[in-house]
Image (cartoon, rainbow, N blue to C red; front, side, top):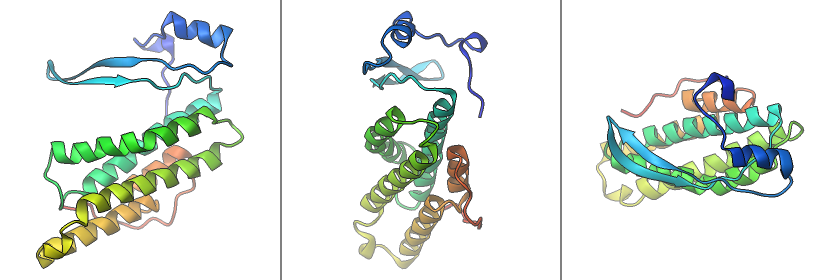
Length: 196
């Protein structure tokens, strides 16, 4: 995973952030990140966030990037598992956003305390927190009314649940990629079919 440096991209840190890193990195701080999410030159949504400002060594920086990329993989597994339950588009995207919102406090806590020494322990704790959130969100969307569905729908939902659990265990394609991003050993690989 490559990290862009300021001189290699169009991204620039605000002067206030650079000053904080030089003068007072020991003080907790947050930065406001806001802007429009665009789709083909049309505004889709306004994004506002206030993440913590972190001072990280290279190992911790790679660890945080890995945590973010692993979260994307688990969110994709959750979204794929919801195929037999929710229609394509906004409904599944809403659950995906709920996954990020639910795991954000844990992410911030773990990222703030990340060091080269605790990187593996942090990765395992992050994977566990994401798994709990993904299972809870899947069950909240798939289990209500399950008994009232026809047998084919029930079987599809159960298959999706197995697909999600396999990925959370690190054996599906999304789960294996998440473990790779976190620098964790890969579990015994076995093919899990994505819900249709």
